[in-house]
Length: 250
Figure 1 (cartoon, rainbow, N blue to C red):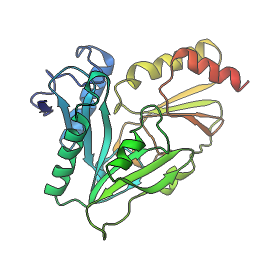
Figure 2 (figure 1 turned 135 degrees about the vertical axis):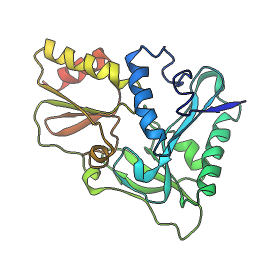
Figure 3 (figure 1 turned 120 degrees about the vertical axis):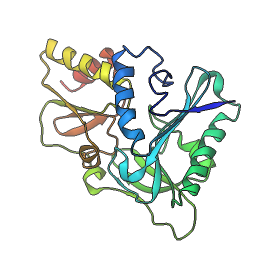
Figure 4 (figure 1 turned 30 degrees about the vertical axis):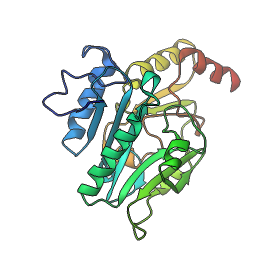
């Protein structure tokens, strides 16, 4: 398998794996604009030359859009190998590339956010445990900060206190999201419009800076729905699933 690393020079012409539409698609445009700024901060997006979901995206943890304390680590934003790509060693290739890069930069190791069992949009904990990632910290209701230290004396990363117990002082439904995930630019406004059409109290908050993300009131910033101050889900919702949640909370 051959791989391509996205750069400021090839970003416009290359597909971004999880959203393979053209650059006029709002999902692609918003993600690429986000990536362009992050590349200047050291983000790496390494993907298969083939069109499909086979890639890893990581960044120095100091610039990660999540509330963690992991100075001196590389943080994996997204790591996805799916469909026909599974079972051919591509995941190992991509992870090993990240490990090699981290060691070349003199990093302490690698971090990634997961969960005790496989959940939508979170990296597979079973595979990561097999690759010797360990639990560094936990955040309610189901997030784990995993890490692969390169030596026994490496500092243990942790979630910031503001993220460990997700809660906000707002009523109704509140949806936080970033453009770090290509799906939210399309689907977050759809849910917002659906809520308004059905008279459901709803507020959409776009996290548009690293500082806001690192001080967010939840561990997973790409997409986080709250209801009456309580965290509901990180799953990017369809219209049907959102209405089911509304019906359940009536």
